[in-house]
Amino acid sequence: MTGSPISDYGYPTPYGMTPPRIRTSVRGLGIAAIVLLAVDAALAALAAGFLIWRQSLLTDVLTDPAAVNPTSLDDSDSATRATMGWFTIFTLATIVVFICWFWAARNNAEAYTPNRGTLRVGWSVGSWFIPVASLILPCLVARDIHRGTMLGRQGRPAGGGLITGWWWAMYVAFWISGLVVSGENGRMQNDAPVDRVSDMRSAATAGIVALAIGVAAALLAIAYVATITKEQRARNLAGAWYGGPGMPATQVPYGMAYGYGVPGYPMPGQVPGPGGYPMPGYPTPGYPMPGQPPAPPTQEAWTVSEPVPPVQDRIQVAETQTAEIQDIEPPKEPGDWLTPPS
Image (cartoon, rainbow, N blue to C red; front, side):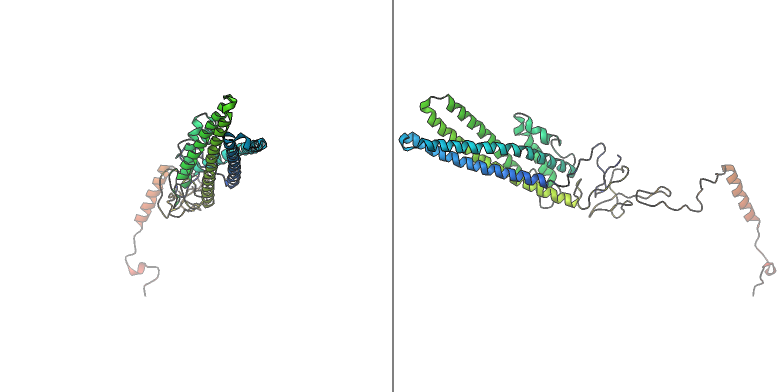
């Protein structure tokens, strides 16, 4: 395959596989996602605090309606609505940035360990927009990212990672609790005015639980993003692509054969990685390998300008030379020498 990159172990990209684009860094997207997730967690915690205040007021209303100032109820309701509005805005921004980071991280993981993932790189974006399946498919992609990023790294777990499982469990629990809150709000609007206060308190309780789970999910997502971003930046700086440690992959003008080479015999122009096995290459005279200057022609080599004699002429010349050599007889007497011996 033309332009197939050679790794530090000496084998090229598998035939027919397009080498994925390696991002130089995911730090910018990672930092943006972490900041937005932190803002989401802070707003969720603030909204939960306002809901706790509202829940206490509603409890007092059920106990002694005259003891609660109606203005306090309005203030708690306004504060909760405003905080949840900002939480929704920042959550939408977080979704956009996080999906961009998610795609970049999955693309890098594919470059580190090609064809090792459960789902292809495109699922890092499309999996979020499939109803019901969006609660499962992105988790598989997140597991592929963790595996591809950590595989071959010393002191790092090679599996999907506990942080991936805990984060996704909290994420799913957050969405389920959000459905419960929606159900409580719908029931509150359909009930009689006498029971509405009790339903409002139940909805506030469900909202507090949902927001608490959301804070935990955001913090775990921050830990996941920070872990993957840090490790991928380290791999990019070390050039640990296609499973090879050390030097980055090099480019050659044409594809090379499969197989492992012999240690200590690198190809011309190739720098072997530490502990690598570069492929051996012994160029034929006149046909140098990439990066090697052509060898000078020998005296015995036929040049292009000299016509090659027929086979019969070459045989006849060889026989004549042999006969001439056999006809020469060595001198037998001392007087036959050109210079008399001393």
